[in-house]
Length: 189
Image (cartoon, rainbow, N blue to C red; front, side):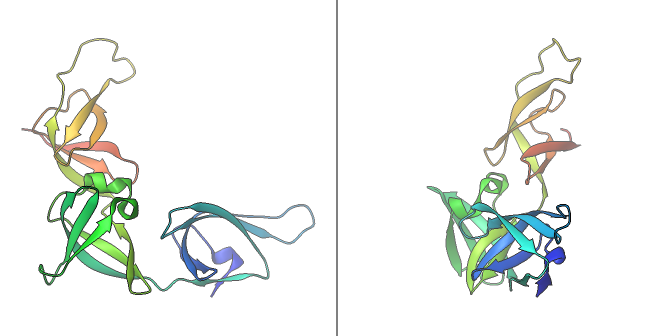
């Protein structure tokens, strides 16, 4: 059990028997009243975000989540196909709603962590930073670059991100999957 002030970001708690990830937590005291922890929670199955206040006398149960390493195979019509890392014949499909926006940065044979709650996969955690090949990058255009020019590039997975003008086709770039942004160029052709 977690005390009201131990409910912090990145923790997973049970609320009404459902798993929620704590996105934001702020402990404050209004005038002479007792302290309150105002939290923002994301339901791990539906993805809905709600706000919840925990008072000093309240406690929350930490959710029992387990992880399993799985291998991403391919995407077909909005369905992401994975297999067990130990047994490639043990294949299963997860919907694009469950994977979220980070799915656009998955490339075949990538090992990811599957979060399991009640013996059911509820979410996928892919690495925060991935290295991907640039498939398309328009040529840099001279002009107003005093604020640092950017252009839109297409990666090997089909995702598009904004990157600096010096990134070219064939380069390998590092992408932040949480924000969906360019981080740095790793290798150039």
